[in-house]
Amino acid sequence: MTTYRLMMLGPPGAGKGTQAKRLAERFEIPHVSTGDMLRQARRKGTELGKKAAEYMNAGKLVPDEVVIGIVRDRLSEDDAEGGFILDGFPRTRPQAEALTEMGIELDAVVNVVVSDDEVVKRLGGRISCPNCGAVYHKEYNPPAEDDKCDACGQEGLITRDDDKPEAIRSRLSGYHEKTAPLIEYYEAQGALKNIDGESAPDEVTEAIVEELEAN
Ligand code: ADP
Ligand code: AMP
Image 1 (cartoon, helix red, strand yellow):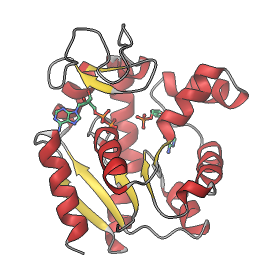
Image 2 (cartoon, protein in one colour):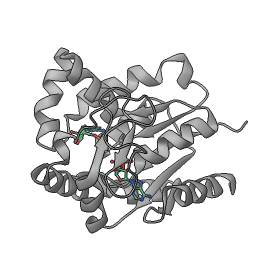
Image 3 (cartoon, protein in one colour):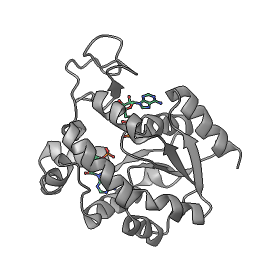
């Protein structure tokens, strides 16, 4: 099986996590989500989690050196040796440069393109399972049984604190200011694959796989 070192790029709510989970299963590579790792640290109340929480709850980016350290540790684990899919990292130019300094060359950067209006609709309806992290949308992708996780059966799906309207605005402006410039950065390196993220999840997955297999 072909293996890949991939990165998902795109605004919050573009569907990076939704797609990364599917690609991780399909290509049997670990899904490395900095958002998931930071939320787990916050839940456990570790020093790192406490430090990150103040930024995350306000919809701001956690400082580069904190996130870079987490990713360096995670990518040095054995299961990431053959390939991985980065979701939510890098989000700034210094983070992208740190990845290169770690000696990591990406096979492809999947840029999931959706409009700001669509982002607001998606984040406004996102709900997730507090137990296993499965992600749903109240309207576009509801669980089979109301308020119950399809994947693990947990009752009581939750809205993330940073999916409240104030934090959504802050995250979108942070994306445009700090993360969107990475589109040009990776385009110049010849790694960028632009994917229309506004179609249905299955169609987006197929478009990504087609792009990857074309190379
Ligand atoms: P990200 O990881 O980029 O922040 P998510 O994968 O969590 O985004 O998706 C954000 C929200 O949009 C979730 O509620 C998810 O169920 C929904 N979603 C994801 N992909 C699509 C899609 N192609 N069409 C409609 N809704 C989607
Ligand atoms: P996500 O689940 O990717 O939307 O991330 C949720 C939150 O975690 C973000 O709004 C940031 O506060 C923080 N975070 C995740 N990844 C990064 C990163 N690469 N750099 C800085 N902050 C991050």
